[in-house]
Image 1 (tube, rainbow, N blue to C red):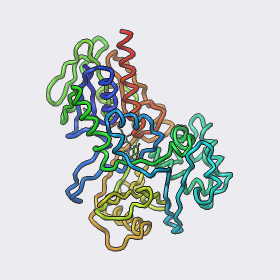
Image 2: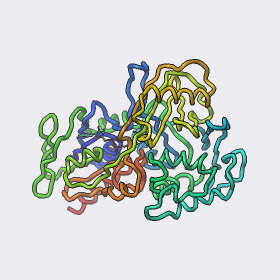
Image 3: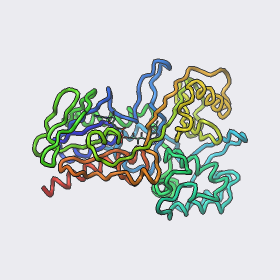
Image 4: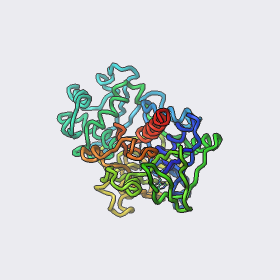
Length: 415
Ligand SMILES: Cc1cc2nc3c(=O)[nH]c(=O)nc-3n(C[C@H](O)[C@H](O)[C@H](O)COP(=O)(O)OP(=O)(O)OC[C@H]3O[C@@H](n4cnc5c(N)ncnc54)[C@H](O)[C@@H]3O)c2cc1C
């Protein structure tokens, strides 16, 4: 039996990988539902089901897509047939669409209708510098000189991918994302979003798949402590009483870093976090060719359009998160109304502030990310905050679960 603490995407992907390998798993989740930071729920204020935050995937996120294929949910993501990133500049009123060509030779950078207006060809050299960036260089240091390309494309992409201001964000982590997406050509850059909701894509199908194979999920069951003896976890102390960890059982700790630190005193893990603010409006809007628009020069950085709901994302949001919700909603709505030419007063709204949305992707925090193995023989770590080589993303979380599973499977072979 494998005990998995935390039913976010890292815990779920570990559960899927271990079940595929023939193990029986039990998940312990402190919240009322699985999904963690990537989930949908019914919001009374809006009288609608919403996601805790807009999540965007790219077609190059191979682990995430493989997870969805395994759990029978690949068809639940939608996106344009070709890579398209519509943008609107709130300061100038200009609109454009970045449309990388499918192949690896990036001829789109020469095309006026596919590239960033005003960007000079020489500015694209910044992407090469990103490929070779090493050490603690920040995004701003690495991309210096990229001028209009930086302001209109690279900065918005960096903030979205790293959830950290580029002045302090680690360029290597952005390089890893670009390496697996933009550098692979447009075929790896198709934007994808859940057709219905995050839970309907990433959580519910996985839970059904796991349940059909004998797995158990306990919700509202927080693991408060791990009883250790002889270099192993012997028992999980849960809010519902102790759960014994039998000889031969293993444990995957897939809770966030601040929880992992209390369960495993002495663990070095990220300790600085960045917020994400999502503002949802009960409104109809034309979805455009991609279902979202990038906004330059405002509070709202991305606007996502779904039937009945228009919502904005502001990442690296520690700088605004303490502002009153109504002020944030008012500003975001003004920006949406301008970008999407929407008439009328502000519709019903809901501001969702995820204060610890991800660890801050800085050099200091990167050094604190542990690998999956621990000093305890039957305990491994998973989570977007472990040393995945990627920033805190769905792709990173899913890979971390698979890596944790692989480490356990390898160690059971050698036991
Ligand atoms: C608003 C927002 C927008 C985002 N946008 C994107 C995006 O566009 N693209 C992208 O790729 N990524 C995005 N992300 C990041 C992505 O959501 C995360 O990287 C991913 O969901 C993390 O999964 P995880 O399993 O590592 O952690 P979590 O989701 O935090 O899972 C940990 C689980 O452990 C549970 N838990 C905690 N303590 C205990 C305990 N003591 N006992 C039992 N269970 C416990 C928690 O309730 C939770 O369910 C976004 C995140 C947020 C918050």
